[in-house]
Image (tube, rainbow, N blue to C red):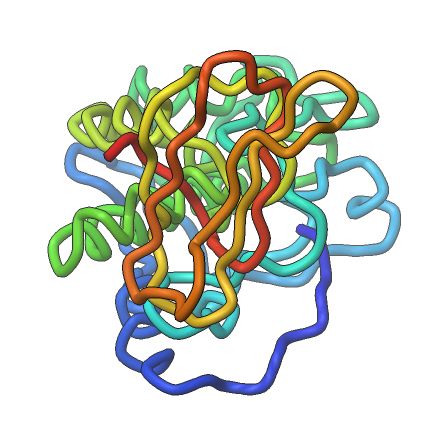
Amino acid sequence: MHTRTLRPLRRGAAALTALLALAGCSSQGGTEAKPKPTRSISDAQAAAVPDDQASPAPEGPPVPPEGSSAPPEGPSKPPRSPSKPPKGPVLPDAKLTPVTGSFTAREKKYLHNRVPENMDPAAVLQVGQEACQRIERTAAHDREAAIGALIAGDVPSADDAITQLCPELKPLLNSAATGFADGTHKKPAPGTYRALTTAEGCTWKALGAGDKVLASGPGPGGTKKVTARIPAGTRTFVSSGCYAWLPA
């Protein structure tokens, strides 16, 4: 999990922060094994775990800008990236057993090649379960906020968790696949897109050959709902403060 400095709270952030913060820690339906409460891990263990699994999942999301479910801070990161494999040896499937009970076939598939040696498989499973719950409960209040969180990559391990632990949420993942995160986007498909934020300061530009500006926005006076029209011939689309984009 990447550590980043949070910005001061902006107007309207509290309500949207609550959407992702609603995620609980209970297991998904059909799970026999009951993961133990989130625990800390040793430095040696942490060195062998992917960034999005080295620390327990946070109790709530980062403070978002006004009008979005999480902040587009720093350089744009590739959304919907599968979890990185552990850096060191992993537990073989035969040793993927909880302290009590048993894992379902679906849970074992999720844990395959994902659990570093000397780590409790239930703790790794819990990260995936929490990702499912955060997305599910966010979507129950605001479906678009959940899609935006998936596009921006704000919920660690969400893609793999949805695919293997909570496939009923795949429609959200499919919708997220049609968008892209704030930042620099190479070879965008021409069309009209809308920013998933109402925060002030969202700007964009479409660049062609030689970085020639083909279009930009939002235009004089600005607007709460920013729409970008990407013309044919655009090689690079650059946005700032817009969080995430979906086809309009």
